Image (cartoon, rainbow, N blue to C red; front, side):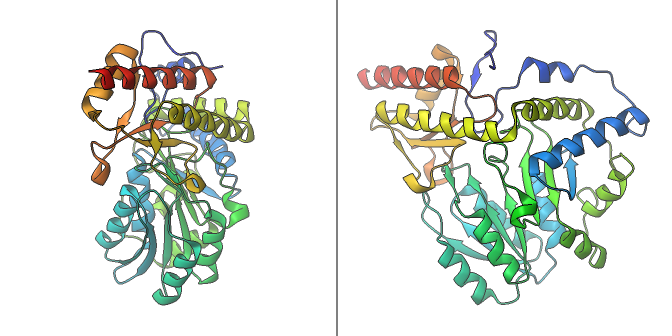
Length: 369
């Protein structure tokens, strides 16, 4: 079981999350030549483990960049000026994804729903039919801003591919807490970040890449250098990266993936489900209401409304100083109205119960003032 370091605050953010001492120590390994045999061995090992996380036999890429870098890589590698993409929009990060499509010169057909829910599959299918010849569907699986998870990744992927389009899944805050078998489901690109359910430090973005995408990029090269997937695949075949990697983070990611695979992906997914249910129940008993509708509640991010009279900054500061627990506030239309608790990585019953107790006691104190 993961043990909380008494010298540090308990990180219950929607990322970054708690990182084990074992993974932190991995970053102390010596700097090596990233064009040498030692790095080639490390890099190949990271890619092999990453394939197991994505459940793919295909290509994977690791960028020295945040999750946003991975999303932009997906968009800029697939979208050309004039292309159309279908983007379900139900929170801040899906809104940003639609903006990224348009910044790349494409047109984003937005399938919107109120925040706290998701567009229906019927709405997405209707948008695809109206879009006609569209290049890709970009679906945020887990909307970190609202604690909402789209329950139909497999079905939406099939619909996109039936239209001849690429299916791209932003699973930055969910992969590892959820299983997304990209080969079995036909996902063309899936994106996740090192600092979420994988429980590594922030700074790396992991992508799976289907054969369809590889063939498309051969025929239509992209106009980004740092995020050029074809270049990463070319260098990756030699065990290298085209540009200088964040070497300490590669050591850490390798160790975090070892931890994940030692536990087993299925067991980690099951644990996230059990711990999120425990969190939802405990926070509900503490008198707070979840933003997400029950049928679409995320297993990795719990967003809850503040009770009347509780001020966001005061609550989170009190929780951090008096209870040594970090949670996140809301943003966009939820700024000041919502706090968000991460349920990611090494989360366990001890951590969850401590968080629930601290939230309950802090809310009770602030209500009494």
